[in-house]
Length: 133
Image (cartoon, rainbow, N blue to C red; front, side, top):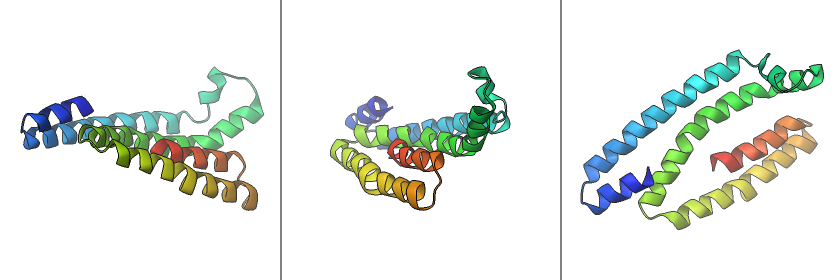
């Protein structure tokens, strides 16, 4: 995606670059929503493809709603990050990545995990901020 945007911007076609961004965001959103619905609906049976343990299955079922939301948000984020890189904003993207993980994700995950005792959900929340950037 970032190659397409940078090529269009370099060729002096900002409208074509903007149209490409819109189309790929719509496609990515539709794909991620479909996958999130599949994960949401299969949350009680998804883990049985990998294990037969009841405790593991219950934990996976408990975390699947977080996964569904993360799938939707992470369907959009890489596209927008690629657009920013295509526009030449690599430094900005790197600062946002580091800031979201170390300033937002880890402290919030630590508070949720140890103070509010959310356990695995807190770890997932911390990783969510790293993945979402």
